[in-house]
Image 1: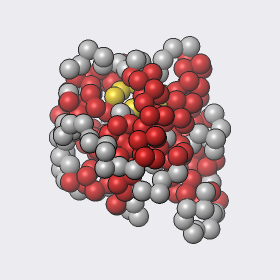
Image 2: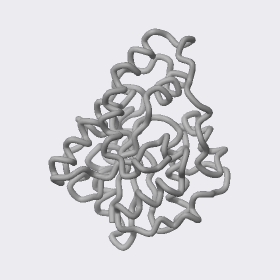
Image 3: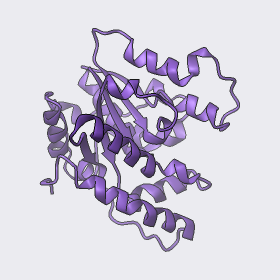
Image 4: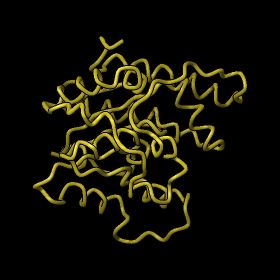
Length: 237
């Protein structure tokens, strides 16, 4: 089984990687397309070779060890417009959505010159609609804020929707990083220190943030609310 979790930025999705690693029944890949995306967009000064093309990454994920389940956590904006449909057609595609009133300020704190595309909402919506058309139904969607409030309920809903054991013992893990995070540690500090999913501290006061951040939130909020309507855990508190 190849299981994809298509996300938007910040640390909650990396905590999901740690949970998947703790389960032990999947080989976990955290943002395998990230380096290629950064190279393609001139965001890092590294020469692209045959092993770091979008197609080579897809080949590795799809045609790796067929005896093992594979889990891929990736940002939607790293793949939309860059990869062909093979990675979507040969996998189970799921989505982790975030409230932009929380995720955009978090993105700004680490990348205050972020490009609008790096917020990731439009690409996540585009990918969701593509998968929905292919399936003729909604793919599995979970909400990050619900996941923080009720980890057991949301994780149970997620894996039961996929026909898998929730393995709730994996909701607690040891502090530490993952090999996938090398070179991107600043993005994963909170996940590095984490031992489980924890609730948000509450709504963020947006007044200190620049107008640009508030405009990005305004633009992305309808997308979040639309995707939230498809979540598998609407009954969670």
